[in-house]
Image (tube, rainbow, N blue to C red; front, side, top):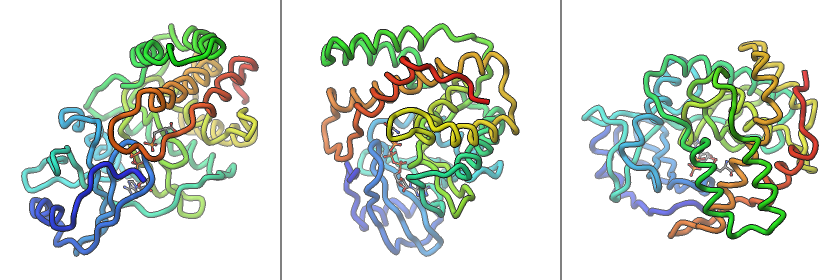
Length: 312
Ligand SMILES: Nc1ncnc2c1ncn2[C@@H]1O[C@H](COP(=O)(O)OP(=O)(O)O)[C@@H](O)[C@H]1O
Ligand SMILES: N[C@@H](CCOP(=O)(O)O)C(=O)O
């Protein structure tokens, strides 16, 4: 389970005195997740999620928490950060920058249907459009610069054929048309980061990889996780449902459609690299749910061997 920093009810009760949320009733560690320490918190005023940031620094948080607040204010189902009595969205707890956000209802779907994919396509288009008016700016922290640097660091651990795959992927994951529509993107909207009540989306969570990048890249990240088959290729029915729904709300441009196969490669490369990095350069502390890099190696190989054209 991903609790890197233990918080006792006594420690949290003291910290919560700075928040207008009443008194602590219950504190439950959350097993899922691999980046931060998370707890469900129940107080006399409601249900919240407490996050102790294990990697991100305090100065990096205003972008993420500000974006979540911006989207929540506009009616998107994102966690709303609670300000403390000083008006701050984060404060130190156990020497870690920490936030308290609203707990959203619903469950993630491990086996999404076409209906879930269509609902998500609509929601991503809404999110992209709503995020455009957010005043904060940040380049995608897992973008081109990070890909090149991480590839260099993990290259010595790879076999010759993996290095060749890496070279092919890196060549495709660069020199994109600078006129592609951009804005703040979620950049990690995997199945575990979307909550549903029946077929309605009730939560978009975990914005801690967000940054400005190409919108079509965000869609490719989603397609690689939501539409993938056990053979590591994309299921045409779920993929169409996702893209048709997005396109209805925010029509893609001809340039975006042309870039689609390379965006799928870039998205698969990004998660292959981060998973390899977690395997070969693990953080100190207990990373108890590492993800398997081999899965994204398969997806990446598939996209390079049989580029997936725009399906609509
Ligand atoms: N605002 C929220 N409302 C409801 N559940 C949440 C919320 N934030 C996190 N969770 C739960 O906590 C789990 C881990 O959160 P996540 O942000 O993915 O962790 P990490 O940043 O460590 O990857 C999620 O899978 C979800 O079950
Ligand atoms: N989605 C990424 C890892 C990020 O983990 P999360 O729990 O913060 O979504 C992956 O699958 O590699």
